[in-house]
Length: 325
Image 1 (cartoon, helix red, strand yellow):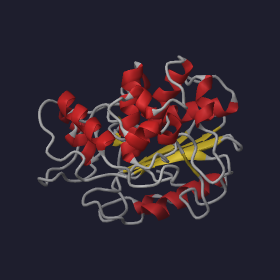
Image 2 (image 1 turned 45 degrees about the vertical axis):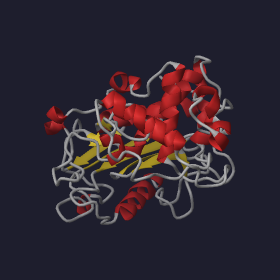
Image 3 (image 1 turned 120 degrees about the vertical axis):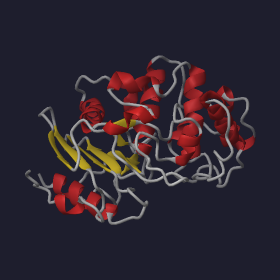
């Protein structure tokens, strides 16, 4: 098996991960793909890649349908929200600047009943959680995307509607043989075919907005390519309105994506137009419109014990090498 980026040494028991898949996309050419310890169609827990691929994409379609506006407030859609959160806009949530805390280990504790009931309770708790930061302060927050998923549903689209159409999966335990393991649950059972993120898992695993999607390298590459094509004016499954979500603001994220920063996981060589996202389980993608280039990296770096064995180094090595092509 060829290893042009020198990634094989990161894969194996006791190393960064036991499964790794990558895709390099240059313009309209077929993607360059490779896997170690897995197959092209094995399913990775995408973790926070769910945010852009599910929730931000859903926002884009709702914008195209004129069902929502980025300047509309949380209170407009969710009368349940009060105070400063009610005054925050959809754009503020997308930029992670609504003042919400990053996450809460207690948010999904003691949820009970069927999945629909648990999700309703999770959403209620998210909007009732006191703000932790001054509005306008950028603090990456899972809570903001849980709230965005609720707004999407109120506006007529659940964030998981796009999953099956794009080839993504919201897994069932019966699908374990197709899924890459990511860790152990609170009872010491392997998380295989179950969402790694505990908040999403305890809430039923569906329509949470911040996590929950699983995808193979093939389908993730296709979804990332759609954003690259959009940035280049090529035909894309995404509507034109999605372009409003990928333009970086000076010193800040885009409306739903992270941006390249000095010393960050792009490893250098990616332009200031670059946007992308990371996932806790060891997933990542970056898109550079100026170079007409993108790359996807999927790993299970949390297996088996959640210890960090060098995912930052692995990401920088891979994405820096892609920039040199």
